[in-house]
Structure formats: structure tokens, C-alpha cells
Length: 90
Picture 1 (tube, rainbow, N blue to C red):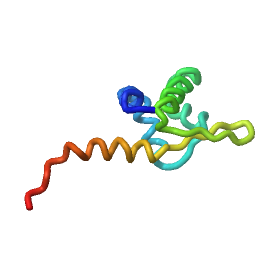
Picture 2: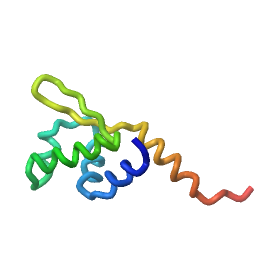
Picture 3: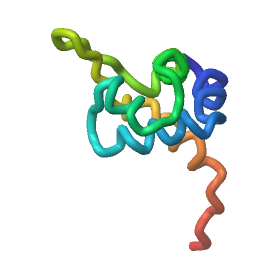
């Protein structure tokens, strides 16, 4: 996906918190939901938005769905932001 989907996904504080949680490694949907006082359907919606923006990937193992960061998208966004850094004087 492109930057519009990425920035839309990052605009929500719950989704940003999920991304910070996933920084420590993959988590199941249940583990993610356990950190929030929200319905499972609401957490599923947020995870779907993160997947749509390609910020997370899901892996199914038996009866569980695990989520992990898609680092390549973060690298692409960081490269885009880097263009706004002030040039260092030589």
C-alpha cells in the first residue's frame, strides 16, 4: 500500500500502541486484545487497518493468529521522513 493508508493507520493512538507492543516480537490476537479494555471486534478492526496499511503481517498457526511488524514499510517511511532532515554543514 501507499503512504495515505500508512499515515491513516498511524493516526490512531490504539494502532500506534499495538505497533509498540509488536516491537517486542510477534503476539497473538488474544494477547493484543488482553492489553485493551475493548471488544475483540474493535481490536480486530484495528488489526485489519494495520494489515491494510501493510504495517503488520499475520501468520496462522493452528487455532491462533499471530501478528508481527512489517519492518520494510517502517524503513520506507523513515527514508521518506529523512529527506526533511536539515543538511549538516561541511
